[in-house]
Length: 211
Image 1 (cartoon, rainbow, N blue to C red):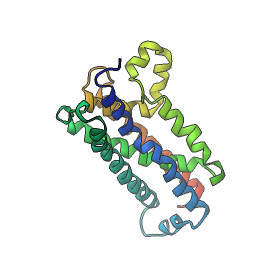
Image 2: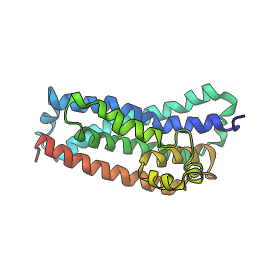
Image 3: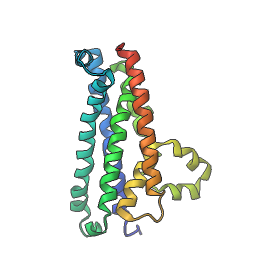
Image 4: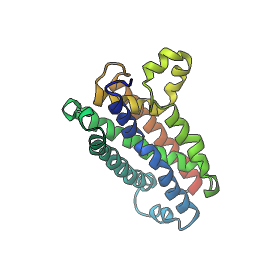
């Protein structure tokens, strides 16, 4: 009774969410360093702008998120086989969406790490960030289907960056019909990424007391 493209629809959600679930491990990496060896403090003494030292961590996470998302494509093909026709994929849009979503997650982890004061509060990363974003991020539904069912809540959900990420990836896999405009999704993700980067840098600047 499922739609013919249901498997590919779910694959789009997996590609979109791969980086989100890696967020916890990367936040642990940052917060544990803040409380432990503080290698970041050495990086901040280098003859480079302080924000570059922080951005270098984000660049590392960007590479990780990109690789994870790309790995979902061959894995999805192996799992879905004939249901996933690789010739129908819009690869320029898929790769562009993966790069943009990876950039968002890389910036977002900086902001999340600036919000977690110590390792004892790491559970907040799951309960306040990962689960709400994933649960309302369109993993099992499109935004338009959500809007037709609960329009008021769907409009409020537009403040969730995950909805734009899942929609963008699914447009690349399934086509534009039935989803938010691809380019509008990319613009929204970039705005969320820039905001997360700014808030993350400001938060870490206050926390680490660097000039």
